[in-house]
Length: 487
Ligand SMILES: [Zn+2]
Image (cartoon, rainbow, N blue to C red; front, side, top):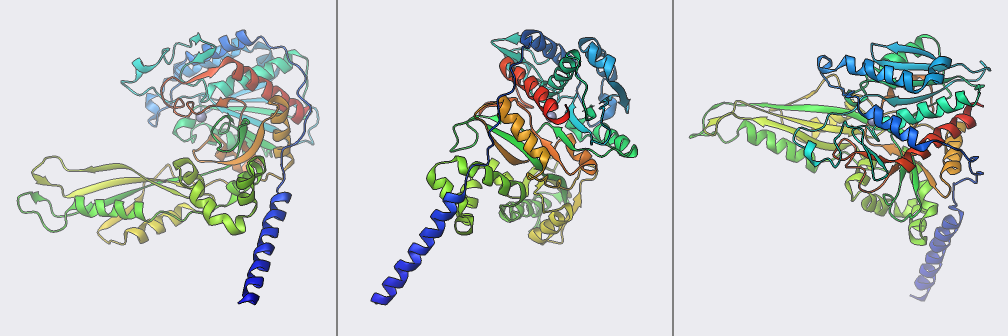
């Protein structure tokens, strides 16, 4: 008995020793960088130009026939007049009618170019919600220290900041060593196949290999990462894939006074319930591993101990982290039933019922894997499962945080936002950057706009806006990034 107690005590102290040792070695990955040199910007004039950009209804639609081409053309003309030095200096091309590609030729052609991405298009304002906007969505009003309107954050707040940065550097007489491309797609919100995909193909046909691509998809967050009070800069190093599956059930129709045991609606509903009950497996992998490595050391002792010892606490971390919809989305391929349709009259049995389920695919999983999982989980030959064609895409590769480009991005963030915690993360939505995967292994998604707890619902929602101070910082971020990357 006594022997057992001694062995237990020894074992316990050994485990404790390992836990504490690993915690002590789990140190900060943040870097020291001198602050960016002071920059005098005419912030008010820049905010005015952003407000002007918001006034263009550059709305993208799945049905390209609905797109107002003249509005895009007017927007292009607006950019030309507001950034005259850039337009005089950079080569400009239009791909597929509306997407823009600028090339700022570097002096050293042995260096791989970099590419800064943004998109011109915005989502429409949901009918019936217009009156809920404090300022009208397309008026481009400036009020209370904010530029208001659709696209203020997504994504004209990035597009215009990139242009402001380059205009400024050209005005300062700067010539980059490394060639810099700017590419602004016109249909990101509906998949980017008409814009970004075509621009990427054009660059590929010219044999362009890029050092890195930077797109939207990350921001400076405050209060969104529990346990860290400092602002956190999210740098997307991967993004999830996408597929929607259509489930269909055909059954005997007829009068509802004598229904059969199994109806189309019942069979389909059971299938949807089974899918929600049998989720794709949860795992900490890829970009999320990198994120825990970067944010863990910045947290309090108990979180640090747990995150440093995933060999022991992995399950607990998965449960805690996966307990919220946003955490869950980073740990697995998500299952979201989005459309359910059947029936036309209350006393008629529908002869068919249809559901659409949307999946966001975790890197490591695949479209084929999702289809296989769904068929297995439903396990009912009466339910046919088909990929809703045209929109599916595989998850992106994971860009290495060990790359020079990631280090450079991180350093730039620290220079422009002193005290920030920079972390890699997994973008759970989609961006245009995925079309550029073939041109470089270093695809990153971030920017220096700030995303507070109430801002997430503004993007694609009501009262989208950007603080002028944040917008000015975003311009400073692109200026410093170009200086660090290419001068
Ligand atoms: Zn966007």
